[in-house]
Amino acid sequence: MWWEVILDALKDTAILFPFLFLMYVIIELTEHNTRMGKPNRALSGRCAPLLGSATGLVPMCGFSVMAAKLYRHRRITPGTLFAVLLASSDEALLVMLASPALGWAQKAIAVPLLLASKFIIGVAAGYAVDWLFRTRREVKALPEGEHFHEHEPERHEEHDHDHEHEHGEHEQFTACEHKHESKWHLYALSPLLHALEIAAFVLIVNLAFGYLFFLVGEDRVISFLQTGRWIQPAVCCLIALVPNCAASVLLAETFCLGGITFSSLLGGLVSNAGIAYLVFFRKKESVKSGALLVLALFAAGVVTGYIANAIELLIPILH
Image 1 (cartoon, one colour):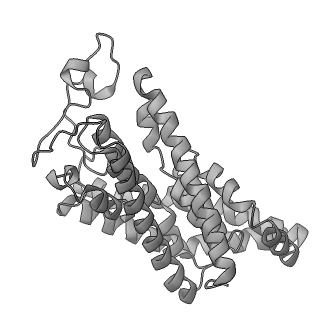
Image 2 (spheres, one colour):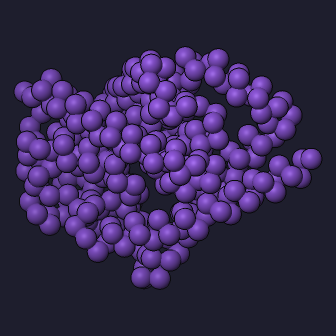
């Protein structure tokens, strides 16, 4: 019955929610009590793409946005930016780890394989991009603990309405962009709101698939999705370009429910950069850079998805 679909979706989401909340608490504790999330001189050194790719794997809010802002201030190389964006998965990793729809045996394979694949792709692409642009962009070294204005002094405009400039605030380039007022807000309310937001997206996906299975039949739906596996990577990469965490949540939960292949998930998450590229659309002079970045991310995701698709057919690890 239709009400059973709703109950099943609510039950699965309720099981997932405590894990999401706990993970966000851990993330906040890690981010604000360690050096993680704070850029240093290594981000402008020879190992920058390597460190950028490793940084992108950490499921912290705003890492990709931080990288975009650092790049705009010429504090990191194009390759480092690309490495961070290709390696980041937004909320997908948390959803995969917490989802009750994906068995622990599958998680033990899918999660490490996803992380390893995105790390390797990020590192390889990062160094390749830096090699291509080695004579085109000068990078300023990043002194330890330095603070920056969101808009450099020489670029301030008379009628600039950005929040940071209006209030004369300094930007510290930490991973999380929220301004927390207290420890209770930082370690309880903020994780709770994050968890509720992601749980809401997951509930919507679960309801959609539940009704689809109910109306059409689970076997027919899965059979249709499997016949369209060569269309999936391109479609997933298009979905991934939506500048919202809902895109990564949709891809991850759809994979957990058996709706897309692992290769399609990988391709989509390679293209996904959250809201990072919107940083480039804030000013007219960087719109072209933003458009090129979006095209490059989409192309990288599509190529990755189809290569992984072919490999997955030969080595059906997750089947």
